[in-house]
Image (cartoon, rainbow, N blue to C red; front, top):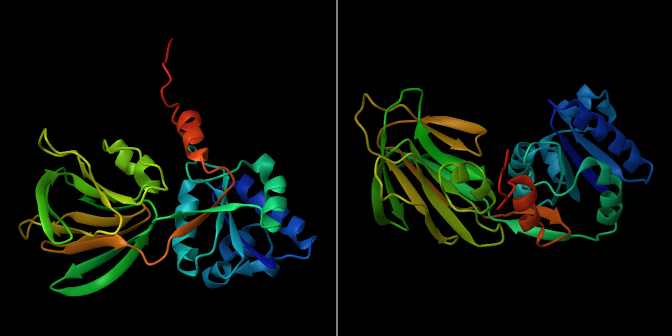
Length: 289
């Protein structure tokens, strides 16, 4: 391992402090260190500041933050297939693998190549307007078409591999990866899916019907969401991972399919997902006063 990138949550002082300490620890071992530019400036380390492309060229990237920071990092380094080691500074931490006190021992193992890689399905969303592709977006958790600020139901038609499924009157539609099954999709009533399962989930948000349920489809298939609305009712948004968004217009189409690359997450225990269900969702516990 010759070059390690560091991405920290700039809003968490403890994560920034650890980024600076980790940079010193790696430098003492003759490993080149790159810290995302904004974080490097906040900890007064301009000597190791780097842009996203340079970070993505690292042997692996250490992400100091919560799952949201990992989602951002995955979109940043995913095309280069750069492995990500997540250090938990968030609330739930379904993607992060270790806690800060264990970072040094984890880094020793990682530098020695003693780890496993969990390849996580990522999504590619294409926005089509008037038959032309306007933009593409990537996501590790989910692609969502949802209403804007007004409390109106949307009418969204769903196709899987060009096969019509249904038109939902709802607050929106979530297309989720297994990694994202414990995020927004779970809140909307979707199932929890092991991240190693090769599927996508389609979950309506607050559907105005009693027979609408999540649909699980093979990861090799594609989903098309078509906005069915009048010209004066186009208050809709396309969001990816809850972090990027763009307004939609009536008759816009959103095509969602597997991205050409996965997010490569460094792990040590292939069964750690089940531990996280118990420890972070308190899975199966009974609550008493």
